[in-house]
Amino acid sequence: MTLSKPNASPATLTKNRVKVSPSSGLCVTCIDGCPGLCEIGRSALRGRENLYPEPFGEVIAGSEKDYPNDFSYFNIHGTCVGAVGVEADSDKATFPAVDLSSEIGDKNKIKLRFPAFTGAVGSTEIARIHWESMAVGAAISGIMVVAGENICGMDMAAEIKKGRIVRSPEMERRVKTFQKWYDGFGGVIVQANVEDTRLGVPEYVIEKLGVEIFELKWGQGAKDIGGEVKIPDLKKALELKKRGYIVLPDPTDPVIQKAFKNGDFKEFERHSRLGMVDEDGFYQMVEHLRKTGAKYVTLKTGAYRPADLARAVKFASEAKIDLLTVDGAGGGTGMSPWRMMNEWGIPTVQIECLLYNYLKRLDEQGKFIPDCAIAGGISLEDHIFKAFALGAPYIKAACMGRSIMTAAMVGNTQANMLKKKLEKDIEKDGTVMHYFDEESKQKSSIVKKGDWIDVEDLFVTAPKLKEKYGQDFKLIPPGALGIYTYIDRLTQGLQQLMAGERKFALKYIDRNDICALTREAAEMSDIKYVMDADQEEVDKILG
View 1 (cartoon, one colour):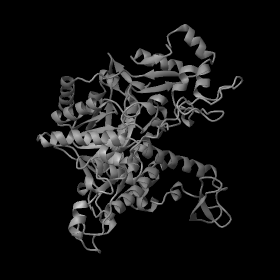
View 2: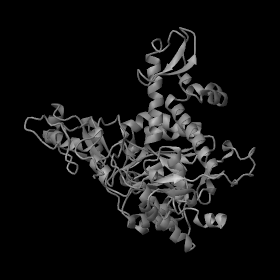
View 3: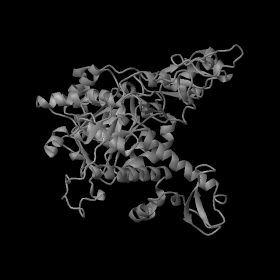
View 4: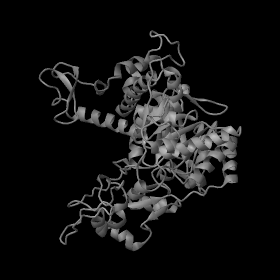
């Protein structure tokens, strides 16, 4: 049995002609005369272009590898006895009473209404387009949003003097969009990589834009190289090379310029450099950020080998950072080499088990334990519960990249479809239809034929938000409404799961709240196998 699906994927717009050989992904009979439907066939013509998910700028991609021992290998316990965090009274221990607020930070605390934040929304085109929805959605939901790497460096309107950023209108837009809607919960995190640090982005956003939360980035779960995007513009490619980025093919080469102008290829690739982690350098950078004015310093690391995770845990402890986010393989990306995304790194559940073990070792030594978040394919309330339980008591939030952006994109798409189909989608009986496909339309508000339908009629949470924001409600992007409504669903779903286990606040979730469904998962995680769970208590009850 193979866990991978090589050589053909919706992500690369490739497919096989007939049944495949599992290990290679090649068709069992590769026939002379096939036009080349698979990745190998496409690569014979377009080469390196086929390394990445397509169409670039319009997709966010997640691994399709079938990792063993994922969150589905664990189930959540339930109980009919007692209540933790609230009086064991049926009138008081109701699921809406579950407290999902969380706090992150050492000396200062970032308050979250819901224990989640977005993945890094960086310099890809899809991130730029949907930033307003992401930022506003995060602010009104009371969660954090992350402005990812290379935003200033990719800003063609940026003012750069002597190799340092003086002003970036795009970064200003990113930060101010969140700040405008901030009401005391959540926050905007700005991230930096090698090029950002050289450009002076940390100093610029902290000193000039009032950013309080700054994140050092070692990597992510999607890839183990630097950030990358595609550039469909020669002038921009030349400018980015001038700014110090790796740009392929070389836009200064006359042969390449001619080929681009002739339409032989349509996009350049911009790549960031590999970061080089150094312990003393890390401590110095953390101290520098604090002296510069950062109120919170955080670290994001990827699905690297166990020794690198141990480094992250130790360095975060020694520097007393405010949040350590660990991203497992299998999550999402705006752009990553597709095979790399599927075949490198430690998957989310496995890396969280390692993280728990490393944190516990430091905890037993009396060391400082930073608040932690886990990322990598987390999308629904059961994932969040299991992520908290698996790493309890150290996990304070879930980093949710693709899922939150998906909510934003759907919100914007549905709003655009409603505007375009206004008359068509009003049926004779006067109902507004939510358009999914021809077979699964869902009825919404009752209206009179010819009445104007507002975009907010799509969103079930609209009345609640209208009451809160009044006239400003009209300024909330549809994508932000999508995020808020999605978080609202997650809120109730998580409250229900926690109430079923009689845990009425996040801090009460522990590793005993889940069970492993296989012996292998139990051995990997040190979570009790389902048939062994509660054995001591069972013996006491039965005698």
